[in-house]
Amino acid sequence: MKEIWESRYADDEFVYGTEPNGFFKEFIDANVPCKILLAAEGEGRNAVYAALKGWEVVAFDQSEQARKKALKLAEINQVTINYIVSDIFDFDYPIESFDVIGLIYLHLPSEIKKSALNKLFSFIKPEGKVVMEVFHKDQLKNTSGGPKVEDLLYNLEELEDIFIHFNFLKFEKQRILLDEGKLHQGYAEVIRIEAIK
Image 1 (cartoon, rainbow, N blue to C red):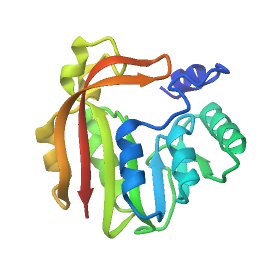
Image 2: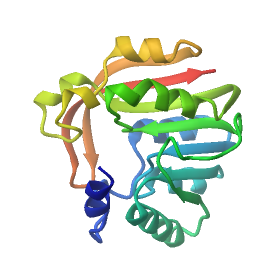
Image 3: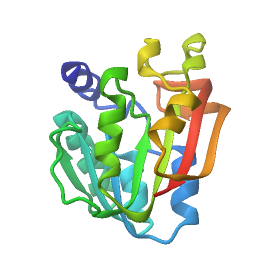
C-alpha cells in the first residue's frame, strides 16, 4: 500500500490540490488556533492552511514523497509544519498532546479501523476535538474519488460505535461537490464529523 502512495505523490502536481478540504477549512476558521495533529496528511494542503491561520501543526503520513511536497507547500506559503513519516501504529507521541485531530479521507481496512482510530484518539486531550471527513460506502457508485473497495469506506453505524467516548457536534452523511485537485472531482457521498472527547 505504501508503494501506491509513494507513486501517486511522486508527480510534481499536487494531485488533491493545494487548497484545504472545505469542511476542514470551515472548522479551522471557526475555532481558536491551538495544537492540531493531522493523520495521513498527504501533500500538506490542510496542514499548511491550519499553519497559515496560526495553528501549531504536527502531521504525519507513511509516504516520504508526501512529506517532501508538504514541506515544499509550507515553504511556498512561508509557514512551519512538523511533518513526520510514519504509519499510524508506529507514530510515537505523548498521549493527550493535541487539542484537535484532523482526519480527512483516512481510509483503513475494517480489521484495523477501530484500533487505529482509537490509537489516534489517545493523542487528544480531554475535551479536545476531532474533525473528520471520509467517504461513505455509497461513494462506490461515484467516480469522484476515494477507495474502490467497500471495506475501506465507512457508514454511520460503525463510526457511532468507534466514537463511543465522544459527543457529536456534527455527525451526518452529505452529498457534496468535490473540487480538490485532479483526483477529487464531482459529486461525492461523505460523512462529516465534529466531535468532542
